[in-house]
Length: 121
Length: 499
Image (tube, rainbow over all chains, first blue to last red; front, top):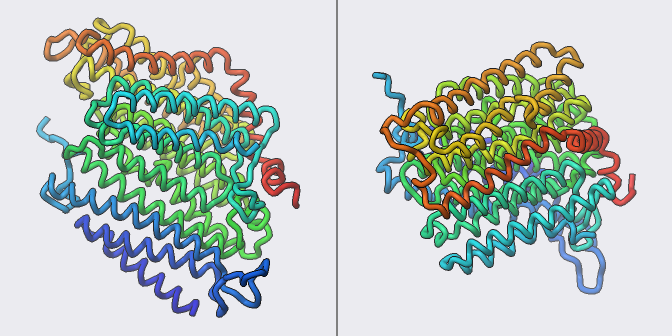
């Protein structure tokens, strides 16, 4: 299971790097989505994958009984997913607004903040 | 005790909520100003507690370390919180003059307060994952502030800023995941012991490099700085000043914290890389500035160049060098924010930030000229201003360990900084205005001038005070550096006396 997860993370990262190298900003954004999922899976896998029950404490007990899954990485991943979702939603809105104003998603044509040097001077 | 640590974070958050509700009313900006003042008070209380007890820590919700989230302040953390609050207050005053009403209606003050809360949280947390969360709080606020007000330039800058910062965050997050997988803990004090005990030190170095890249993008070191000059010259001046003062410094702080507390197993490798990164950062930044003719673009490249000095303080890894790094951090935040403030006022008077299109400020606005001279020459390292002592400590530390080449680069960069500052001085202040107008302060409404000159004068005064009376600040930096190099106090305070 861990080997499979590691391969999945690797494939996700490779695909995201491929996408992020594109000039099209939307492709970059999709690459970012994949990379954020790869990071989340990394956290999840590094908490060790154990075959066990959910980490629930039975009523009246102080600690879970028997072998249970590690709950901390799940909490971390949940936090990271929520944060990543918020940031990606913002970035998507930003990309849309940028497309409306600049009429392009090609990062080569986005030269408004740093216009090309006027070489005639 | 825990209230002392929580208040500097809680006050800006509460202020943000109230300021958001009042965003359509003039009261909103006064709430923001009042909140910033309260934050400064809370930070001063924290500073007093740290001066009294050395290191203080608090466990949130009484979950004992290393399981719960810890807030902790040592000398470095405390001084960063205080300087953040000072910059926040200065910016809140400056914003009274600069930020137009419709931008306030978009929630400027709320976003600004959240930014301050995020930065403060990053300085105070003792938990690695919590540090990630504070980074995100800070980032989402900074994204919004960067593009607030709209326009092609800001959107373009925003896209580059957002894209590169998100990638760096994900690298940082993966690093956290892997470090947790190796050690099973996220508490920074606990990590120190756990990482040292690991057998597989090679893997730790790999993770250390992930952290170095992640924080390096935030700190804008060579070769990861390209988002900074692409974006810092576009937002409102108040915003770019607070960005210039604080955001990159959070990256430097995180580097300093992690590479003195946790990743000290292979100093010969990691810190050697940092030395060369710092030297290249200093040099490339200052050369980049030489090619620019826009007030804020020059200043943006100088941020990069100055970051090199701070990371150099960390990279040399001697008590004197770290002391210089801490001193530099504090001095730089004051000076850099102030220079961006000056640029904003210069634009109000002369009409542009393009140095080719302005001039005559020396004759028409002598007070502004005097207030520019102080931070500008402090940045370049003229005695007796604060920058001189900061550079002196770093260069002396480099010479002490016979790093002659590094010392030479540091001095050369100081010289080239003077070149840039005199360029701004000559073109914006001395040369006559190309359009033949007289850029007197009357060209801006008196309310605007008053609100904008107060923080500039205040920060300039601080620069002079640090310059003329450096002794207490140097002593403070010395203790901070000692705590960084020998964090046993930090570790025992956080873990409550456990080994």
